[in-house]
Image 1 (cartoon, rainbow, N blue to C red):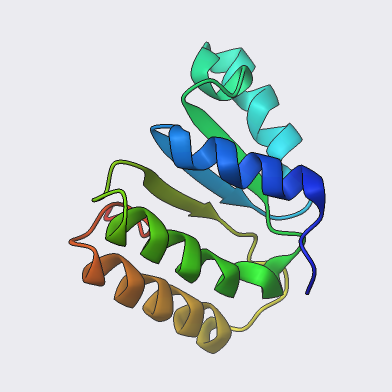
Image 2: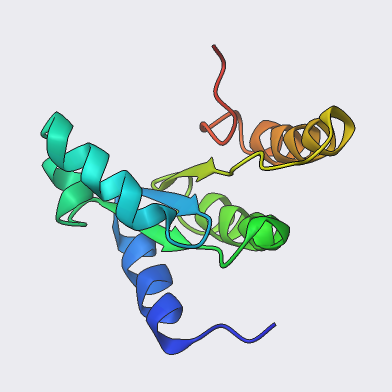
Length: 117
């Protein structure tokens, strides 16, 4: 899957930011609207917290190389978060993705890919 230049720019900005939130499709816009209501200016203005669209649920696997890069080269300076819609996925499908993301998160010492709530 080719990454368009807009996403490349966001990835580059994400490497300089304090955190990155990967989201599906148009969810970045929705997330920024919530952030605006809550007064979360870093997310609204994309200053220290950058949203990066995944283009869809099935693209979540692209998070792993980015996480490896931030942990391996930037020593965890960039926190990586993921927001995915469940849509019509079965419990088994959801658990499979959550388990895989937890594995990635555990390799870096638990930076926050999977919320612990």
